[in-house]
Image 1 (spheres, rainbow, N blue to C red):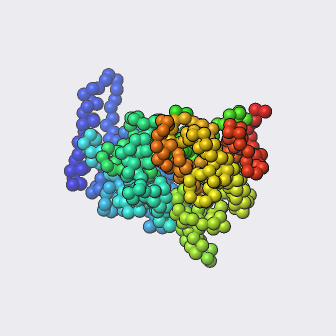
Image 2 (cartoon, one colour):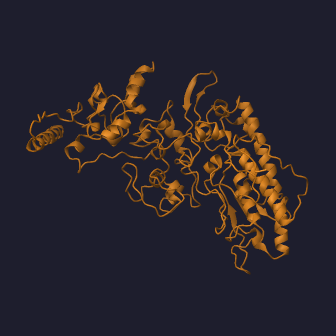
Image 3 (cartoon, rainbow, N blue to C red):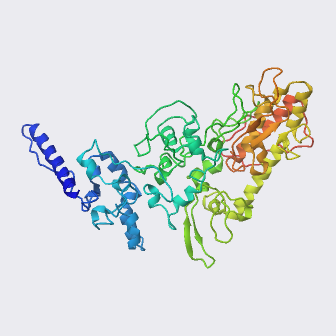
Length: 557
């Protein structure tokens, strides 16, 4: 195998020389310079560096643009960083060199077979596999990388980015982005059940999320086509559905953005990396049934972009950005991707936490000190350390107090619209708040479509419900899956009442995503309901905005 491989490489070089000689020009001196060296590990065919001193990869002699991008990444300095760390040991070498890790090769190869400096750093072949066969037959052999990830993967990012020091894959696998994501009613992971569904696949299935969101297309549109940025093993394999893997958000070749992300991390705009998907539906629109409520609207709330139902006489002329986006250079990641060390009772290092559960204030196992994926616990058992280092709060305790305050305020205001007093997640005339009174009026006047999220009209009551769904906290989760007593499921006069459910996604982060905006939307919604339907609350309401107004927010009057 190795002799055939070297013979093929030599033939390629000779062919290039002959071609250039036959097309010679006057006064041009041609010097034959092969663009490759014989691979140190002749069995595997990993080519490695063409020039170790300049870090010119053999692949980069042809793929010049990718070589330039890669040179700016941490992968290109993996060996140097390891040696400078002060704790380099032989067991670390496998993830700082070119070898069988990260690609389809299944036996010891590259640096693990021949410890040559040509294999230093994480080069192109670390992910794409050996390049010698591709060099011999570029059209026939194309070493494609994989975007599949898992703790048991035999290729891809997970072969290195796991373990006690870098447990990215273990955390990601347990997260909603990974295999720990939610499942359908039949128990099938959403990335599988939504893989063929349009437009759900645009954000729930890894290949489509990569194509649509980072190919310049709006994820809210369906029926769009466009090429993936780069080609990978699973790109055109029917049924090879993927969760939101590392490569969906991170660009393996380019370090133009922090963390090699495919889009900016810190700008409060639609192009922000997380907002690419967390923007599916944020505003209520006439002509469209609103029974599914806000959907993936977390990013839109944070940046105040095309979000909420804007009540009559809305008093603000400026976009409302919270301090969590306006004064936060890492935006979503400042809270949702917060790393810290996990130590034992004696204070000794146990493992790192990288933040790739994507939980802003994760529950902490009180015995081990480790975050609990999807854990349910009190605020006292949650980690608020990330809030204290983000530049917003002076201490973890201060952040905890601030969360409790904004959560209580939003609960107070959503209760003013509807308090589910009997806990059955059905809006009834006997419940508390203004909307049950609107419902009573509608029933008495035989105008049930005044509150009907199944028809296409958008009433003031419907809009107020949308804003309450946007602002609802974990303590008022009934807003995200409820029924309206006697609600019509169509707008045709005399149609039967099917009692359909109205749903929505968690959007507010218990208010943290944008306290001032959410509070303002609720207050103006309450005023609009009172004015439109001639109602008074059961008790006096405090309708002053309590949150600190962000810089630039100016009322009209």
